[in-house]
Length: 391
Image (cartoon, rainbow, N blue to C red; front, side, top):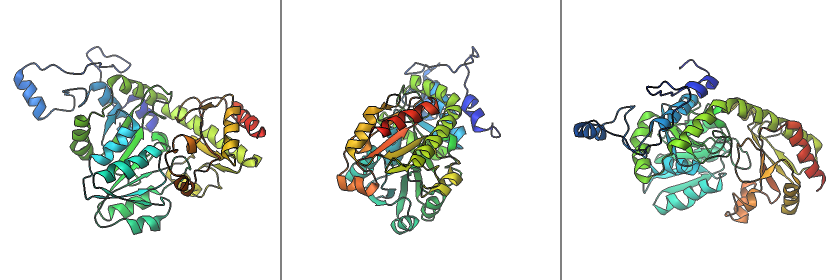
């Protein structure tokens, strides 16, 4: 399997077949497991093997298939599936941190990620320093000999800043800090994050992995030592694990993720190029555009610009008018879906931030985030152009 490409791993990695040799992965909808003897139960609680399970909160065959499959795609040794993307983010951080530890984080983050760092970790005595994620000098100045971890989104939400994984990892590893990154916008398709230096990669499986808006889920990926020695004890006792049925849906999502994400990224690139050429908007932000500040890094790090672009209509009133005029693209706050979705971050996903903080992050009143789906590219572009023409 080590020689397989990602597209093959996405279909076949991690398969566990029952005695019936089913083609499609089995859903093991059970919360517990039976032991032949009391001695066998005792032995399993002391040390369970790779295919030995105790309780669904600790692990399950369907969940294990999902963990193994995405770990193989990402190039990680192991993974722990969680109930949501935010369970993965909070679990990866809180499982390894304690009072007195120091974390350096990029400031441009999804609102809930920022809440975990600003409110939750600091409440329990963790010191957090925020930096401009694209400024390597800022990272170097903030990382200290006692820094325990660094955290960032490889592509920030919603302003699409791209952070140099290899460069930040080199600075962090010089002091022995763990590099934890939220890789949602890069997706497992375009990611080489572990090879580029990340120690821990987190995904919201709710997004591109499911890809059809059906279920919440997340995954923490890293070394077997970190996943089973640090993450698993924390997650299994705090209850943030994924359900077997969700794991089965995510397995089915992985089978088509490469085809979906590459098609979505091609459409996103076409739309971003067309809208920028039209010159009707205040700004078009897309990492695949040559005008993007980290365009060269994007090509080197991901190979493509991803499935999301952001546009600026100039004001909140104009943004709302644009959103309300869309016929195909739906207004929601998810991304990575088969359906194209438009979001107004300043009044939804990032509304809890102060006006000053939003301004510092580039989240203007006119900013609209567009997650491109699987509809016909020409139809999507026509829908956007018609809405923009009405401004």
